[in-house]
Amino acid sequence: MNRIRNRRVNGWMVVCFVLAFFSAGANGVTAAEGYKEVGGGVKYQAAGEYSLARLNKILTSELAEFSDFKIAFPEAKHAVTLYRVVYTSVVPELNNRPVTVSGLIAVPQNVAGTLPVVSYQHGTVFSRTEVPSFPEESAETRLMIANFAAQGYVVIAADYVGKGVSAENDAFVIKDATAQTCLDMVLSCRAVFSDLKITTGELFLSGWSQGAYNTMVFLRKLETLGMPVKASAMAATPNDVYLLVNRLMNVSSELDVQWVVGVICLLVNSYEHYYGLPGLSQAAIKPQYWQAARDLYVNKITWTQAAKLLPLKTRDLLQAEFVAGGSVVGNQFFRQLQANEAYCWRAKTPVRLYYGQIDEVIAPYIATLPMKYQETMAGASMNAVFAGEGANHRGAFLYGISDQKKWFDELRKEQEVPGGRPR
Image (spheres, rainbow, N blue to C red):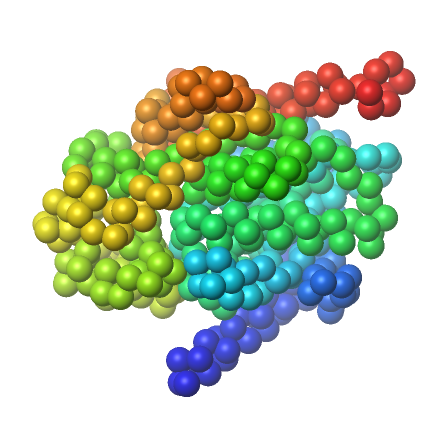
């Protein structure tokens, strides 16, 4: 009972903090107080706007702060209005338990007609608030807004279970919960669009890193339901998490960065909770690191604090017997990782898979796995796209959102006849 009561109190504290953030504003983003209910457990709130000047700052000086990868984006054409949406989803892994989650909608101003929609799935973050509904804390979200919404696309982005206003534990790489949350975001946004009198058209998908994995499993769910997607693009995709974890445990690379150890802490603790594997984290993580790993997962400490307490390499974090079990699928954790592959179905939607040669996390062979698989299955084209010289993890993201914007534009033009009307 105390655990349930504490969870409710903590959830209320998170909601209050989020409301305070959007009411007070942050770096130019302000919001009207309160939410508007639009039915079906969906509500939304105005969250300010990004002016042309602000958007162009994102595309220049803030881009330079994000990465030294050499790339340039077109200047913003439209100011952007921001909305925060709160909706209900369910967690299939927990017997479809209802959860409250949140996300962001970014709408270009002064654009008439039918607007294309990009559903963006964000990458791994260690705090609850480095997510789309807190755009000032999420550089990748701001770059998506500046590159897509400022050019005439509506951008929608789910925070995921355990992020944003969600009081749940982080559902990190939890396959069905992730796909369901992203699906319910799309469906919830339809109610908001209707209320705002916005007409939307074709749906595109985009994601980076963990968000690229999420995009792939989301795409599979949409195709299973017969919901059309015009095209999908993923940068630095961990298509096979089982393979990735074994690579990190068994094949150390000079490119490896310490925050990947934090990712393993999230993964192990998340699977312990959502797949009902009590004791997994203690069996996996060496005793001297267990508490720091747990505190990072439940947001008691930041990554900066955790980094001082955790080792530099994944293999040094984990117990020897646990590492040995990975190559032979020696326990339920590794069997679940295998079951959670993201790409083994016959796809219908064209996909571009962006990868960097010096990616610190996702090796090119993991990022491009679906290409040959789809060729073998006679599925849709999933083309691997090299992000260029010097492309690391962030470079793959930046090259990817630049190239996919051009690709999405081309696909949209193919559907038009003279006069700008759809075929």
